[in-house]
Every structure is written in structure tokens, then in C-alpha cells.
Image (cartoon, rainbow, N blue to C red; front, side):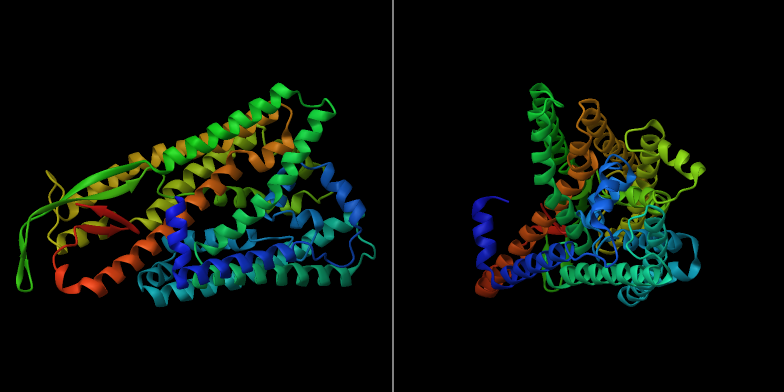
Length: 447
């Protein structure tokens, strides 16, 4: 957002209130990261993290904003909620009951949200218990035993439930998607420390000045590439014939239906990471030699890990796009409003056309996410900056930039809507028939 737009946004009381509420919730979240779970030997746990900074364990710590490293009450972060959300969304396509709930509108979504909450609590208890068992195996517990396991499981579950509540409050009363903003805050909070740590490596000679320049050049290029692709659209022309609305006759017009190249946003990267992190949370603490041998192949930067990660990104790109964009519904809406795509018949043919276009766009969008999430991380690790790759790698940067763009778009849309409402209130007699745009997925497309 430009400076004038920011100043204009601050002048709107409701938007200012929402921004302040979002910031206050993030402050509460960051304070909770430093509240430790009782019964842990902090020094022994710190040594454990130093030996596993480049593994999936380090990725879990990244998404929790350092909470797992401190083993705070927020150690599990939002990952159990994301994992259950994936399961619920998969069930909406496989189970008839869940599919019917999704079609019921707001009431059905509330029931699905309730199921997601219950599932999150159960998964957090399960993960919390087995993490406590793993901590005992790693000899970082002051007084091991069943009492410690139950206390740890309940503490971590309560922390996850509180984060889930914070995210829902931000979504409802703040600005942006609450869960995405919490992940964003956790990653951004750890970036300065990682940056200074990289400079320390240069002062000790472990990383050369040329490598530092290459790191920053790669980082800037990655951000620029993400911003460019996130703004790319396929604009499909939609024509509306001359028709009567009430007592007036509208003129024939041409509008555009915008299809983003990356329709799924940052969700595929987050879902793929959550899918990989779930078994790693338990396996990382395991003393089983076979499990540890398998985990060696799933270290970020390894061929097996990157291949599996890309496969999951491709899957979730197509899956989530199918969830949020229904070509059949769009074609029915166009037909009801008298709109049609040139050279394409209304109805089923329009749905087929939109589906084929969306499939091609989604493929390129999925390949773009795979490229962004893997190449920068491999480059950083090749330059000897594994810690830098954890918080400045493609996945982290994609999430930070994507959430920033989405939140800025919501703020801008809020400002436009408020100004438009004020314009209508002041000049209602003069603006009849002056609207020359349609809102598609929160974007105003001019005629």
C-alpha cells in the first residue's frame, strides 16, 4: 500500500480499531512464546535444538515462532489446527455428510468449524503426550514420569487451543486471516535473530562476504519474483447484453473475470509443511534406529524431502483450488445475470471452459510454488547458511510475502468500500447507474 492509502486507512475509525486489535492479539501471542512448560531442563533442550537446526524439527520451530525451542506453552503452535483442517477438507470431497454440510452455507460451515476444533484438541493431546515421552528419552526432563506426561499434554493442548482462539478472534474482529497472520508473525519474529547469526558466521570466517552478498541477492530476487507472480491474472472477458433493470435500461457492457495464476495462495506450502511436520514431531524424539534412519532421508535439502514436498504442493494446489473455486457455480451465476463468455455457450460449456482454463493456470501456479519453496533453500544450503535457509528460504518468504499482499488487499478493499459507501450517502441522487464494475473474489474489475 502506498503512503496516502495508509494515511487514509488510519483515518477510518473501524479499520483503525481492527488494526489495533490485530496487533494486540499478536503481542499476546508473542508473549506466550516465552512462557515455559514446567519440568523441562532448558539447557539440555537448547543443546538438542543446536544439533537439529537443519532438520524438520527446525521447521516446526520456525512455524511456532521459536516456541518449540523454548518449549513454551505454545510449543505445538498452530500446526495441529492446520493438520485437522486438511483432514476436514479432504473429508468434504470423500464423505457425503461433510459434503452436504459444506453446501449448507454458513450453518454448515459452523458445524465443520466445530469438528475442526474438536479434532485439533484431540490431535494436540496426542502430539503433546508423545512429545513428552520423547523428551524423557532425550533426558531433558527434570522429573520424568506419568505426571509429567499428562501435565505436558494438557499444557501444550491448552496452548494450541488458545492460539486457535486468537486466530479466530483476529479473523472475526481484526484484519486478515487470523491463522495465516499468526504463522506470519512467528516467522517474522525469528528473522532478525537469524540475520544477525549469519553475520556472526561471517565474522568467524565460516561464511564468506561473497556468500553474504549472494544470500541477499537471492532473497531480493525471490521476493520480487513472488510479488510479480502473485499479481498475475488471466482475465476472461464476460459480456452482458442490454437489459432492463427496474425502470431503467442498462447498456451492453464487457467485464472481466480475473483468475489468479496462484489461486490457492500460500495454503499449499503451509499444508505440505504441516503434512511433513506431523510425523516428524514424534519421530524426532524417537530412539528407534529404523525411525531415525528414515528421518535422515527427510531432512530439508535432501532429494527425498524435496521430491515429497513438491508432490504435496502439487496435490494441495489442485485440491484447494477445487475447494475455493467452483466453475459450475460461476457459470450458473453468469447465466442468471445474463452474462456470457464470447464464443462459449452459457451453462455446462461455460463451466467446462472455466475448468480447463483453471486447470492450466493451477499447474503453472503449482510449479511456481515448487520452484520458490525449493530453489532458494538449496542455494542457501549450498552457500553454507543452513540457519538462514530456515527463515529466509522459499517457504518462509512465500508465506510472509503472500500474507502481506493478502492483508494489504483486504485493507485496500476495506478503504474502497468505506469511501464508496460515503460517496453513495452523499451523492445518492446523482450516481444512479454510475457503477461500472463488478466485485469478483474481493476485487473490483472496471468495465
